[in-house]
Amino acid sequence: MTIASIVTAPSEISLDTVGNESFSEEMTRVIDLARDHVANVRDAVADYGEDVPVSGLVIVAHTPDDVFAECTTGERYDAVFLAQDNENGQQLWDESLLNMVLETADCAVYLETLGTKADPLLPDPEDATDRDDVSALDTSSNILLAVGPGPHTILGAETARALGSTYGTSIRGVHLYESTDAERFQQGRKALDLTEYVLSDFPDVECESRASEDVVAELLQEIEKYDVAILGAPTKQPLLQRLFGQSVPDELEPQPTTSILTVRQPSHALSSVYYRWKRAIERTSVGEDSPVLEDDF
Image (cartoon, rainbow, N blue to C red; front, side):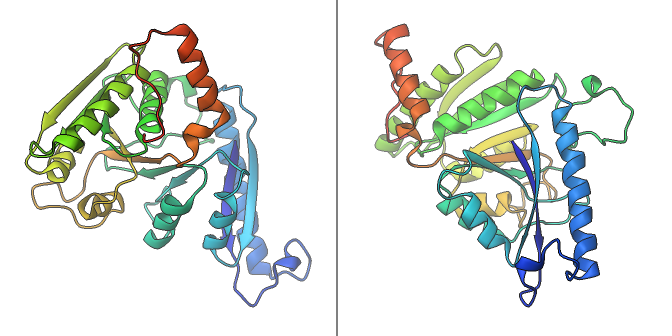
């Protein structure tokens, strides 16, 4: 895992001077602050005890777009996690940049939209509180997994499973469909079957499929009943507005309380070594009636 901070430098500054004495005093100060912040986050993540190597990186560039284009294409990283806001509630990235990453990344993408009742996932490194007593979600928390016929079903289900297992939450998978669209219903039902299979060994999970006159509007309302909602990268404008913190429908709270984790599974994911291995294991260890991972999910 790499914890990265991006520092933007004015276009007239040559990036070749980074770290040299000729680099401006102000830019040096900003870079040093970024290094300190990355080090704090890296140490906090490492303290959670997961057996995963954690490194820190400060990237100096003229535009964040160039950095993300380089980091999210090719095979450099398997996934990228983006927080929209910093600890002071300030927006970190332009919507156009986030859209670009969601549309073009070759790797998996996780985009965090914090609600007003969310606690920071990482405790203050200076806080003496026992980390075992601090978590972003308590045992009464619940997760909504929005299930649909889009290409992100598996990643969404596996993300819900990982988050739920870590924090001991319940998971509810919901598939909403328009009653007049039989084809979409069948596609969504297939996705829900696959979701149930991925979560089959999770102790506290419920899945349901129900008709709706307005799928997007009902999903927006459903989201606000949970602590965390996991969505596949949306294309409908009302969902994008909710995702990027823009105006929301009148019937919703002006300041939504639910945190959203948007996931994007790259189109080639099911051809990866991992999923080829997963399919092989399934063919030898489960019955013929188990859902099959197919390229249209």
